[in-house]
Amino acid sequence: MLMKRRDLVKKLESAGWYLKRHGDEHDIYKHDNPVGTRNSVQVPRHREINEVTAKQILKDAGLK
Image (tube, rainbow, N blue to C red):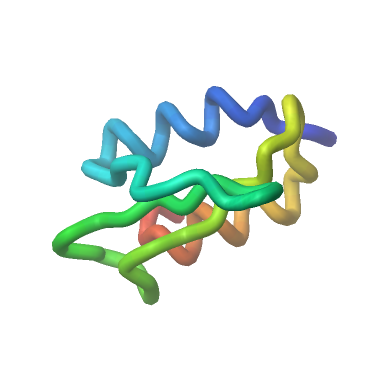
């Protein structure tokens, strides 16, 4: 199962994450007061992201 990238980005942004910079194949999102294990997460620049990868990104961001 796949998750749309824009849905993942909306979840991050609604929790206070913001785009820090564009990488070659990933976008880096940052949070000034992180709840999860990291203060930045990488989001691949694909239309759809593997569900396992999306869940790990949300977990690292403290959203699941």
